Image 1 (tube, rainbow, N blue to C red):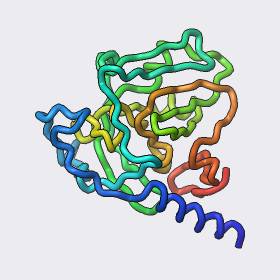
Image 2: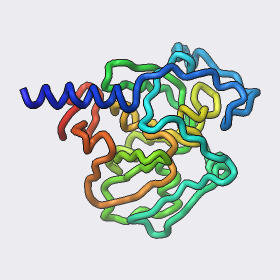
Image 3: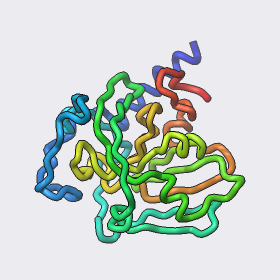
Length: 222
């Protein structure tokens, strides 16, 4: 009974705090160019329109200035580094189709385009004893993933969704695309990355959600 009470309580908290919302029209909002065209199909796969994608956040939409934004990488690295938004756009990008699965039971499929995490970590030089990577967001959110997973899956930090620059409510300037993980690993508004040699529990993980977060696996506990 205690376990089910935890599950029920966490789901209530998730619904109350973050909510499931329909993404509003993004025309002429910060982070969009106004002349981009959202694609509906990619490589023969039908994509979920942004207007139909449900979306969670713990503190509402964050509005980050493109010109002053910096992405910092610290921790177990040879040299701490930071990138401007424009610098991130100069790196070779990768596009992927991925389904985001929320623990609440909904999902959507989209085309994500961005820079591989590995590309940025290589710029900083990761120490040999590093095992985990923590992602921090501008709204106080955080989560972590194993370094090996990020490298093996070539996980990206996306700046485009269905060929549209990420709208503010979708995480502009960067959203982590954590393939095969539940949606709470898809951190939005990423501002800092910390490399560490020990596990780390982020916002929802501290509330009881699984730190592994494997889709199809248990949503709660480690």
